[in-house]
Image (cartoon, rainbow over all chains, first blue to last red):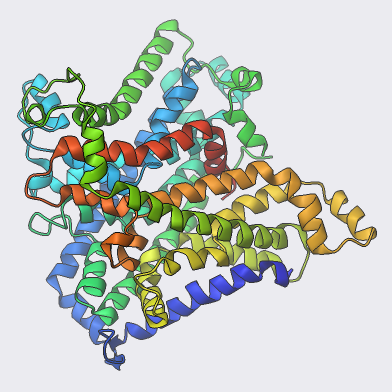
Length: 283
Length: 294
């Protein structure tokens, strides 16, 4: 078996374990690529706690995570629920929801910059139709983060498919039983559908959280982190430190904190999932 | 695999779909809501193509013309030369083709090891392999850059290609799930006949796996075509840029020419949409498979 899995073992050691340990080591050093790393102990970590731009990036990222992930899961569930109702055009509709996530993120970002354009963009043109004068979206520190959250909702196609598969696994007998008991449509959704798709909710939440913590290309292309650092997300600030200022040590300590955060969130989600995720569907 | 079949629209799927709303009214409302949501999702694409077919002067008017007339097809050849579209496409293919070969080589072998050979510690290793999918790439981004820099590989395509020859957890998982569905008896019979593991792999496992190999190929093509962060980090010279990276040059001025940018976008998106429409079942099965059992 080892002979067969050796490509992966090599990749795992060379592009995962070794970089992970190297990054831990760098995080205790000052390293600009030109001179060898210089050990500085916990200095990078201490400096991070006092770096207002870093704390701002943490706040921006938490904002994005808190709004885009639950809204994304909810949107995906609703779309999947609607798609599951009828069959006419379903293949076409499913494709429309999925296509946005197969196109390059840079193309998506450029397209949405034009949609959010304050004078001639699609969104403000639509708002004008109902008599609302739209904000300047990406140009406004108040609206820049909501703009990126809105754009993120366009990218929920993956979760839609996961929910659709889960919805089709709900045994029909459960709905019939609920109807016999006199449950109306809302109660059937709340007491039958939602409990049965909780594994899909957990999966969407988990992948959504991990992706949202790493959000980068959208802000990098669309706003460059602005205006006034309002969309400077965690990985964007990490990228700038590493690849613009060549502060590899500082960037590595940021990377390790991110690593820790993702592990903690994953563990918490799995621990609490025993209480709200129902694994009854699979035999 | 049983879950996947339900996603497709065979007669079995139709029979299973639950009619939640007893009333015809409820059904009509749900249908309408679904259509409105789909229209909302398709609208950005319509806006993109509509803008790409306008004369520059018509781009900046409000309210906009939704369907420009006459259609300005010449925007497309203009966009094609505004950024070096052809060389960016060739560059992207120069990365995509070796990457696909690397992925097919490394991931089929690894998946075979994980799926078909019993050995001590195998399942633990497989669990580790799966959990690496959860770890943000940003965590290893800096040291991986340093490693390639020290090898003198930055500014070449090697950092984007070589790792693919050493496996990728997502594809290993996808292939393993498929290999598990091939009856073990076939392998056992071949072993009794004195066939080597490599022989079993090549003669028994690979031939029926063509559909899943096609899926992996499409996924990897799409990934390379769309990848932004890795080319951004590793490619230093503009003449090496990929399509996804080079597209942003449409923004490289105070006031972007949106009709050109949207034509460029359309051309960059078209190949992946064509691939997706032709092979959407393969795509959707892949995504759903990783979701359900992941």
